[in-house]
Length: 231
Length: 315
Image 1 (cartoon, rainbow over the protein chains, first blue to last red):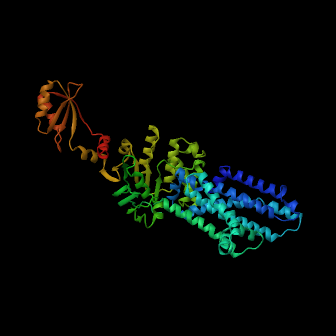
Image 2: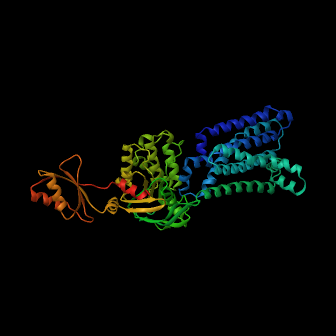
């Protein structure tokens, strides 16, 4: 797919990979609540760092997807080729996801090293990775949607962060202030609730369903946005 | 693939509104296979909107467009396969090398894997991109970018070509080259080409369609349009070896001639306007023979297409 290649062409991918590995490595091994400080062979600190780094990095990757094509007019070219809007949206979604998967795969040495230091809960690690992948996919889908809203990359980036921050933290903060039903709903809407429960090693269908519907919603809205341009 | 099959474009009552404004207002026309149609009009007349609708990018508010047997409402994918589209301003991915870009487009068009290489090489030859194929598109000059744009529109050998201002921003040599290219490939295809350069449309197209404010105001060959707008012949003649006033009177005495004028600078030259529907070439010649005058020049003066265009689109 062209998209993945254009990532690598424009250095964006390298910068993002190095920055991601640098950040997560630094906090996992050297700083603050790192592996040595907790004296536990676990990747818990890595996961919580990755959770935040990905949150900021993903919109930077998705922001140009549709914004740029729309601005330069190549979107018109793409949509008059015999591919459906869905294929275009999915192509962009999958190429970004693949890049994230590469980034995560490159952190596997952390896992191997930690596993050598002491006994590690393998199940928790794998489910942690699963959580990161699902969360990334959800934010990619939101990022692609905001990219299709505006011609301006910066606007798409900020808009993606703005929408993302609600799922990332605001819903969970609010949920602790509200009791009862509203609290329940808000906590269900929070990505962190589901991420925490998955990365603890409990993969619940409720969590899977949450992420999948978020992904799906983002993609459907993007598609609707493309269709709107034709009117 | 349907080869050698006729693919006419039929536009029926097409209307496209942007808000309350009608960009295209109930237009209908037909383009036959093998025909190159020139689409003329001032900026904002609705040319681009119509072309976008044919290329299935825009959905019209009313009306239908058929390309071959396919309607834009029912089978847009079939139309996309058979159409080569060069949008206005020729958008391209600047960061991609030419050859990779053509490969990407070929894959999008669903050309079989095994034939992609051959198609790309063929396109590079046809469009004269041999020396540029490994350069990034962003580094190319405008003329070469335009060729890349044409190459991407042609790579799947479409039956129908939609070209929105294919020569805008090129230098005169490049314009001639692109025109020749369009003529060459346009022989077996149905081509619609938009422009606001009249000479270009006249040089390339079999038929001209002028639209203004979303409506068709003229349709025909450039000759038809001229005839339609003037209806009478204008000749410039030079007659020597005679008295100029005598010649003037004699010319005015011919019954096919409506009006005679002296030309300003030249004593022997006259401008003759013939009555509508008639020709006075023979009469003028016979007159000169009879009087023993020497006819040294007889030039029919054509109304310029520019004048027709201005007349039709100004109000």
